[in-house]
Image 1 (tube, rainbow, N blue to C red):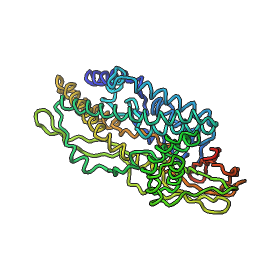
Image 2: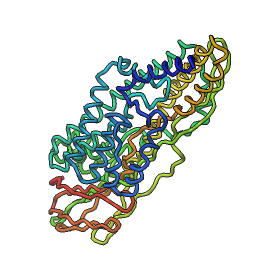
Image 3: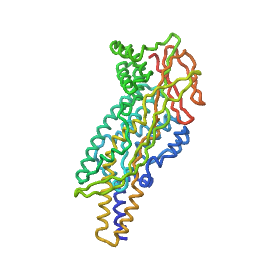
Length: 467
């Protein structure tokens, strides 16, 4: 009994120090994807009201929970509430990035995670998630016709992603050094050979959606130089996207970029010009929902400082096999409009996981090694209680060793764009069983945004003037 009390007391002292992070029974004995399955299913089916009723509270922390809330409320057409949650997430990200990489609060949460699982650690958002955070803040300003504020958010998107990338690289080096100091030598080569992987294409690294929206808003504000820069970046990510190519051609022609125009026209043809009584529709179509992380169990041999091999069971997050989807057709006044891919969020999520999986493995190996050391220390003075202590430890490890499946799971799976020149006047967009009517002014450009999941879709439009 004395051994069990001592062991349990050590556990709860460490866990108590992480209470300010994500300490809860759910995070202790389950993982993020499992705890949010009802909310995820509701978004996937297009039931945005149901999803808003199932939103997480205290599961992913201030950054991730508010990201999910902001996205779901945006889909549920409650833009003020959405913006409020996204701003709270942004403020939490600012505080996190302003901290030292190793701070007292992070050490406290790490202490608890070393006796349970990574779900007790403070959530550090992926680079692509930070890009989407500012993209949706920008869209909330576009929705309210505040284009200057939208541009501020889009400028910030690249800054926060770069800062996050640098911090992640520094933390990986520190975690690797800590393992060396403990004399732990994991065989990562064998692990990475078996681990599900993704390619390194530009689409899995950079967000063409972010670049294209930024280019459109810069052009609408008259800032052609910045618009052209972002159009070119979007075209590099999505070189087969006709909508992006047309916008790049349009901007290059306005700027008198004769040399660029020659190469652009050679590949994409000439710019489609508006007739006197015609207008342009530029449509962004979000489709589906990004995949959730799952749990993957495997054994890994680990050698200690004396060269002794121990076989540990790891619980790691992974993404299952994935096949990209084509754009679902929409009807514009009875004519099919097929979009072309701007970004595949699933590729970005998989690439990000591949970049941080070594860090996840390092922490889990350190946790399992320390748990084993604690077991030995707890039982060494009392052989009679060793069996009971071992049983307590094994049950604890089995219940608490959960994969860290945290990610922004309400993001769209894929995003497409399309450009259509139409006669000025009233237009009707049909998406599944839904219809949306809007006006296109002569010589003007109308931006149409839609997000469709399951049998439902959210649609709105804004006028961008004469582009």
